[in-house]
Length: 157
Image 1 (cartoon, rainbow, N blue to C red):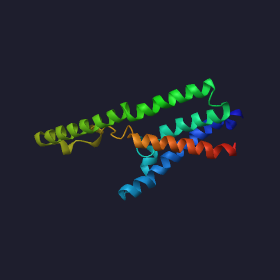
Image 2 (cartoon, rainbow, N blue to C red):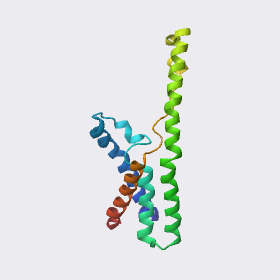
Image 3 (cartoon, rainbow, N blue to C red):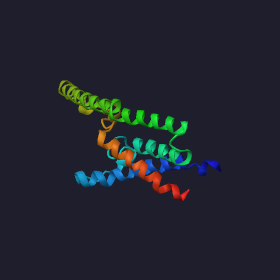
Image 4 (cartoon, one colour):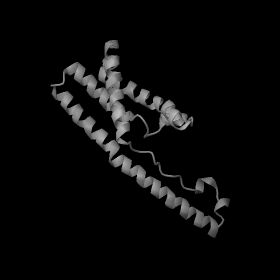
């Protein structure tokens, strides 16, 4: 039963769900395109990874104090995760864009050389996921989302 009383854990989980769901209306406002699948995808505004680690770190800070070793460890890991979201994961997404373009060009060439369109769908390769990482602004707002939700949720626990 102690698991249900673990405030940092619940703050992080609620922040993930909130950040994922709020991507849908934000995307709709920005592009006028309704895409409910964004709730189950990586990337986008705000970063759910950043929201989660900011919420768990804020929760630990509230419960154990900002001078505790647990808060320090959580804070360092949160910074690493947010840095990774804007760096390595974002670069992997940009590389996926280029690779997908190359695959499309190659497939077009094959289609012209052979009868590509007659092949079964399972024989065709899937595209690589391009929206892997986050822009710094997405990570920033994910972090703010996590901190705010943790602060708002704490009185409920």
